[in-house]
Image (tube, rainbow, N blue to C red; front, side, top):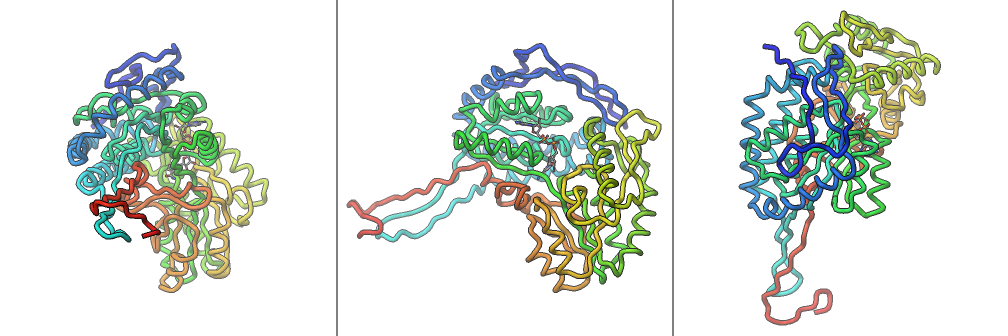
Length: 495
Ligand code: NAD
């Protein structure tokens, strides 16, 4: 069954109502496989951002005072609606973002999973009770909502990433002003519609659209925004962190990656091959966890390279709605040109282009580029250091585990990582020594599950984690509470 999006103009969602923006500007939402227009969206300005922030604060009192298990009921209902509409949302997402249908189904499933997980938090929200150094005194910590939070998201997981942020933030009792990426606003809008249908009170979530540089920046700068939760590029994340520092605003950052797969000489090469193809070319390489560096032992490099080239050349590019398609388009023309320019950079740096490298049109007018492999790559080349965010993988040869780990760690990022080996000691050295938030053993760099913490080290973030038991921490403040029932003044550290 094919669902075709109806071309229409969307305005902003503020205080529980669809409302016109204060500008007369709009932007178009384009299918990257066909260049069909899916919808258009009104562009907000600073006044609209201010209206949205005021609406979120107006709703905050009632929502934050609603018991967490009751807030969670909204999420349970939202999860059911997401399940009912999974196929419809997945088809729409393939049209909006381009990735193949099996992956957009996975994206919606991830949103369902985090919604259920966060809903469960409604009956936990665990603080601590502990002892006091004084007699007749009781000590505990409680989790409190932060207030109104600005949520800014990228386009590569159009429903999963918004859900990863919104669901824990909502169950914790916060108000939200959200600005999705302009390439994929429709799926975020669908998620917000579902939350409203599930019973979220008006104003708790507000949706504004427009460029990051103006609308996103206005959200970052608004004095009544208590925290920014951002997923996107390192450059934008650095800027946001600097701006938030001016107001001492809390900011959580989930940024890029340059994720390595190490293939040792004792690896199961069949398994490693599947892991590299999935990690490098799944989502057309547009994942923060994409495997963009394959660090392969020289003893197996030739065999692995030959097999990887054959597998890669057999991948079929096309519209993600076509079940025969393995690799969909990239998101937009700017991204296409950026990937092309990195392919040229790789050539200029002296790496060997083994296969791919061309922009092509598989009978469609969208943004398609061939899955591309570079070999003879040195670790310090730009193609091995900078996030390309496309279907381009670099093969780097090493002679042992020490060198492999050194190369794995030799980037500014530290999100995901993987090692293929049959040796348990090598696996544990990788777990202990790779600088990354995630390490997979005998599996690709992709595949996070929502009940484990997600995030990275070094340039990938600023220490926060999403999902798992950390999900709630990102969106709550901890208050320490001391209850003295001794009936007298007791002095800690003195009495
Ligand atoms: P981006 O930084 O260009 O944009 C992300 C969001 O920030 C968009 O909504 C954009 O409009 C907004 N934005 C841009 N400039 C802004 C500004 N000055 N102020 C406020 N908001 C601004 O990133 P992108 O191209 O949309 O996404 C790709 C990047 O996201 C990659 O680097 C990828 O690795 C990263 N990413 C990270 C994770 C993770 O969890 N670590 C997950 C997915 C994507």
